[in-house]
Amino acid sequence: MPRPLPPPSTPPVPLAELLARTDLGLRQLAGPREGVALHWVHTSEMADPVPYLLGGEMLLTAGVHLAEVTGGAPALDAYLDGYAARTVAAGAAALGFGIAPVHEAVPPALVAACDRHGLPLVEVPAGTPFTAVESAVWQAVTQARHRELTRLSEAQRALAAAAARPEPAAAVLRALARHVHGWTALLTGDGAVRGAAGPPPCAAVRAAAGRLVQVVGNGGPSSATDALPGTSLSAYALTGRGHGPQALALVVAAEAHDRPAHTIAGVAAVLLSLITGPATEPGPAAAGHCAALVRLLLGGDRDEVAPLLGPQSWSVVHAERRRDTTRPAAALAAALGTPLLDPGPERPQAPSASPAAPDAAPAVRALVPAEREITAQPGWTLGVSAPVPVAELPAADRHAAAALRRALATRAALVRQRSPGPHGLTSLVAPDDARRHARALLAPLDGAPQLLLTLHNWLALHGSWDRTATALGIHRNTVRQRVARIAALLDTDLDDPDVRMELWFALRALDREAPPDR
Image (cartoon, rainbow, N blue to C red; front, side, top):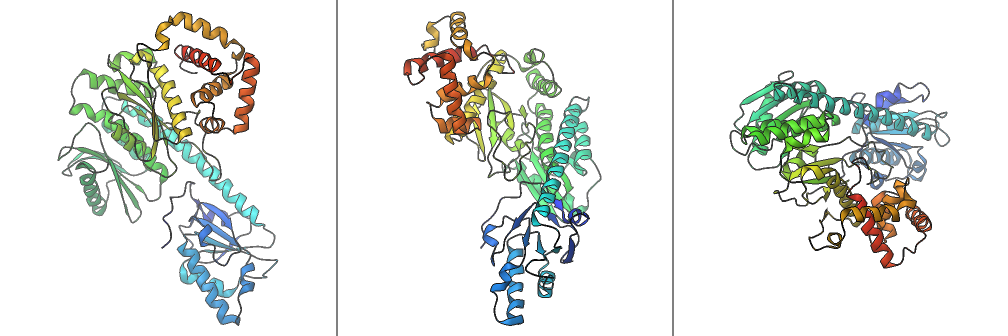
């Protein structure tokens, strides 16, 4: 049985878009003509390319492997039938056959085999190199990715603005319906509709929505999906509503295979969790948290937001989604038990690119009340700050980012930043004296934030070149060069443990006074 493969990470490109390009001169000879989508391109002259396919490819071949077939036309027909069947079983979206220098035309037996197995077959003319086809696909993928990110950004702004209106739940549902081009609804566990927007669904979709709500509303997963002909259905449990008949769930019915719609729905689920949560947790604290999130989403100032969050302490969580998971941010918010979550912008990433550098903004950030226990979550890498009052959240945000970098470097599921105890070294030196000493000691590194960040991570990771490179998303030789530059600027021996201790003390002292945008 073929191994299960992750879903494609690239947006689909319609085959019809490639066929319409006159500069390529492609011509479809067999297979389905509608609804064929490509995610990438692979070239192979092997008789069995299955072990090297991920699914969703256009497989390009010049037919070199056909020369190995002996036994005449019957043997060739049987070989091509098996080749087409294996290619379909591997999940390839289409087969491209190049004309010249091996073959002057596409073998008729291959055309017939592709028709039998439902595999789109495209003729690549002699004047079109395979690299031109591959380049065309990646250009189309890049353009599609840009359109997706633009759509996500516009949807997030619209949802944030809707959450600030007088009837926020209804406004969010309407904005969500517009941006997913489908039906959105708030349903209780017994199927009652508490609000809806968008074109009403058919009876089959409505019945499937009721079944999904029961799945997420009875202590099951925080989200669930179902697929119907032409429709993708998702349900999200809203935090703060408990379980049973009155538990609320967001249901979204969108077009099938609409990837951005799922991400947009996850953002809306977080907002609606916050908006509907005070229904079971009345009081000024819950209302203040709601107002705080809305103002933060709309760019509010931290000093304006702080009074709304109240006097309690908070932990900051930075989270990075692992490559082997597609769990939405809404599921993480439900698991952490907080609606105060920023799903962040989705990062554009080509299939062959390396992951984004961990010192960039994380995909997800969250504020969690100090009394809630934060544990490792499947599919995520977490960095957690120590609980702090609202006034110290900017420093906690930096500490959570540093903890996430350590977690990524050490491949740990969760790393916590620990506050020094009352009898620690920092308690022996007045904060003002510590900062003055730190500024003087590190003055040669002023104006070089990359060097300061490298020194901080290198010391935190015990001088490990490889782990520091992983944490910063750079090459280990770059780490070596930066550390050598730091040693030269500071005119010190970084192999001396006393020097390392003093530098770490200085960095920690400066970290407590660093501005929020550091």
